[in-house]
Image (tube, rainbow, N blue to C red; front, side, top):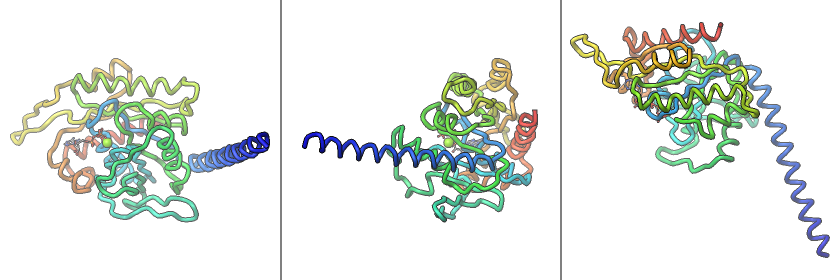
Length: 294
Ligand SMILES: Nc1ncnc2c1ncn2[C@@H]1O[C@H](COP(=O)(O)OP(=O)(O)OP(=O)(O)O)[C@@H](O)[C@H]1O
Ligand SMILES: [Mg+2]
């Protein structure tokens, strides 16, 4: 009797284990098929919070799409998803034949974020394993289609989200965002080291990954009289560039009007034309494409 009870339990466990295994195998297959259609996977990272990662992700994705590329924007900041508000996308996600269909900002820019799945102000209370599954689903179960670029906005630091991503897909390159100040640099170095480690880490899928370059955000402020001031100090990105031999992709000015536009869901790169802010992103795109070619 004892034996039977344990035997049944054992069978049940084995069945569940098999089910989980088959599901994981199927997801892996779907992931592989999806990723084969994406030419360049680019992460936007920083060791530090609030330096402008989401601002850079959104404006970079919009600028690339305006140059005619097919672009996907994946918001992997599961706890603080901002890109949907910054893009001003009102449309919701829907599911078709078991696949999540991303929301469209334009014909050639699609976006996925936790923000679509949450009501305003509702926190995501998840830890490691659940986050890993969510991230895998955002990659394997989303109908991304053929993309030239998948731009991925990461939360600050090098935690679960970044690690899961680098272990799940082959990331082509990282854009590192910093402000010029020294305290930011300390944390940003950690993000740089993380990407460099992913080239050799045993479980990493990103052996060919590289750091595309550094973006210095809030680099300077232009006063109404035309003078330039540096509220966050000077030379941060240049210092990192020398230290790690990686290029500076661009320097973005601090501009209160840009902040206002981001809050209104109007990415400045297309709603604030002819400005230094826009020009900085055009330069970043040019330099980034050059780095990817090389
Ligand atoms: N160049 C800029 N000029 C003015 N405001 C900016 C600029 N860059 C970013 N901001 C503003 O600073 C705030 C933080 O930017 P953002 O959300 O992009 O940073 P983040 O690094 O993604 O933050 P988090 O670590 O919380 O994800 C936002 O309100 C954004 O609109
Ligand atoms: Mg952010």
